[in-house]
Image (cartoon, rainbow, N blue to C red):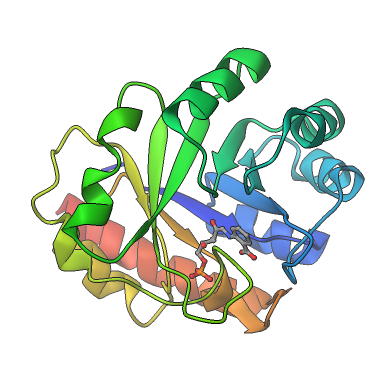
Length: 219
Ligand SMILES: O=C(O)c1ccccc1NCC(=O)[C@H](O)[C@H](O)COP(=O)(O)O
């Protein structure tokens, strides 16, 4: 069974190498100045070039306007855009049209009503990313290392292509994948030693558990 894996919030070639070596299908770069993972389009372009196309490069933005997206797309040439703000279905469609890139729309999930909000985006967004809601007082809409109740996804239409995200780590990814069947998983702070500081040992450890669980799923 194919299980895409995205390591998000990369800032260094060491962490990028560890992600690619572990088998990441996607690597994420954050364009959000308040984040400890923020990179400039130029920094992301260098990292993308370093990866040699071995993983899809995802540009993560939050309610970005065309000017910001133009600079990112032109400089970094991502393979995919992740919209992690309050972008409307119309905005997602417009972004897809303008950049001719696949778009992943992120949603913060706390209850069934949050999942129902994806309906108008179906057929527009290429993939969904289900993350937890930001804790009160957080300055970040993502990368908070908190999980939501995965049971909420149990009744989801099997045709919905989504990345499971939010508070994943080596200790809980096995349980998550035994409970729900996402097409992809996404992790950021679970492989960090401090906010914004990726730890290559934690990345390696995460992939070991993912591979073991993938084999379980295939058996
Ligand atoms: O990671 C950030 O700092 C961030 C900032 C602003 C918008 C999105 C952000 N992250 C998006 C991601 O895809 C994260 O991987 C996702 O939220 C999961 O993070 P974590 O719970 O830390 O694994």
